[in-house]
Length: 101
Ligand SMILES: [Zn+2]
Image (cartoon, rainbow, N blue to C red):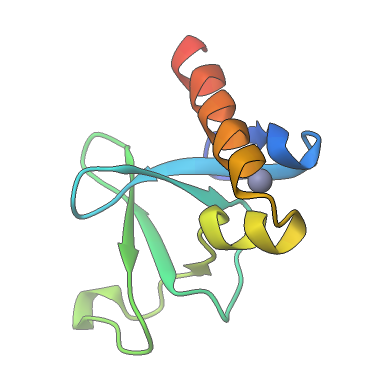
């Protein structure tokens, strides 16, 4: 079970489990469900319960200390299937699933 609402990225045949979080610039970013200590994304819920993503290199802000780290699916998806056109299609398909659900 994930603490975030999962969708699947079709670009990898539905095997990649991801969720969407909102970035600091207001964009929706796909994030791998499994936390990864080498990741550069931290995720937390805002007051409305919406997952918010913050891209951080090594240094976290004081109130972010102890946050779990995640990997952006934009990067991990390319690693799994280095076909950018397909990846983009897969991510937009996952968005449709999320919006339609
Ligand atoms: Zn993918």
